[in-house]
Image (cartoon, rainbow, N blue to C red; front, side):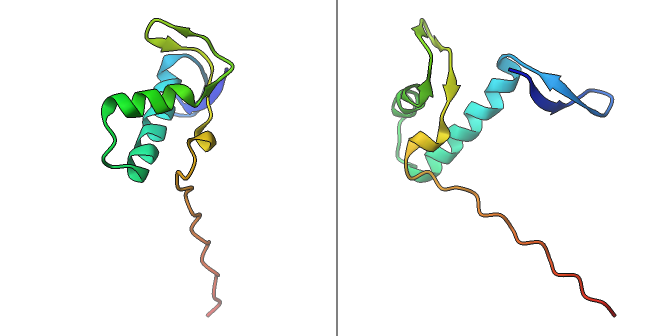
Length: 88
């Protein structure tokens, strides 16, 4: 899928492939680790693979979409409220 990203030299564009999947999976792994800091690498891998949907396991790769919300109990980021402007 085309994912919006920054481009070399400035600006934005759409990219796809493992270069775009890697930061998504790394972020999901960190969220999972924040929930269960004692998790082993193998346990985390298994949990992340089970969170992929509409895919087929082939060798070391699983094709599909990582559903981070299915990890259960992973904290969602709380947006920081925008400051209220004050007039002098």
